[in-house]
Length: 299
Image 1 (cartoon, rainbow, N blue to C red):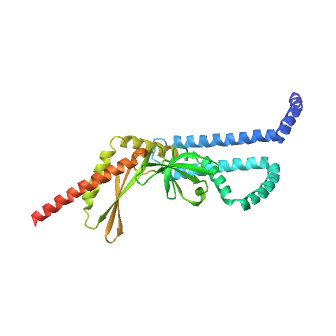
Image 2 (image 1 turned 30 degrees about the horizontal axis):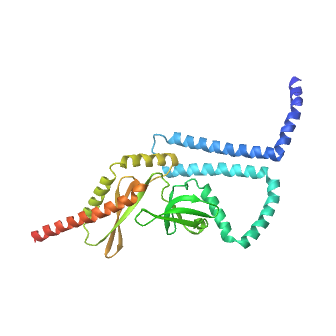
Image 3 (image 1 turned 90 degrees about the vertical axis):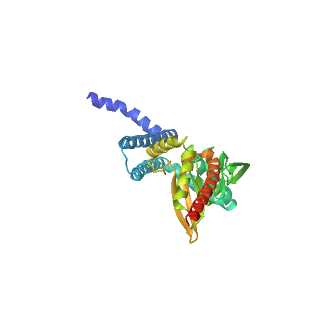
């Protein structure tokens, strides 16, 4: 009897709670609670994956796919729950929004694309002030973002800042490929191409390029390796090796291309490329001339 009486006394309180949750303030509280719960679940799943893969060498691609799939399921579920809560208000809002959006679309398509581009840039966690990005033919450091435009401190072909400020429309996000060159933090992967004719001394050129890259990176190569390893572990991705590597490709029947790949600080890319290229061609020229003299004496 006491239990029945307890539930009878509790009934008005429960009814008040449900009445509160049916109001706009209650729905807002529930929506925030759902989003917070989704965030907590995602962080817990990320922690579990880190714990399960700690000390092991998992197949990074599979782990990453599992993490992304679970995260998306949680967020889609949370979004559907929030939409279900606000379904009554959303229906009328969408009708009004569709009418307004249709009118604005007729008036200014480019302006709407700029506003959507601003939203995409602000929601992209990897794009932040100071990031080095490439948009179409433009490369620079992101220094400012707005509702209509974003600004880049231009970086020229020499990988040095030119001193010019580029103001670009946000709509380029949808019309041009955007590359984030600083997505891995203070270190990045840099490529240098060398073109040769078919008479190139392949082994000599490759050994010289690796030697110069090793000498240039001896002060930071270990730190870069630890940096990339931490990113691989935390984000479940496979990154290129930090240590220098060389790749060969045939351009046509008369030309070979050697690509030197190595890790370096982002703010030293231009300086390093200039130094390595200059030393390479000087020392390679000396090697080939010595080899030619030796061959002529042998003959």
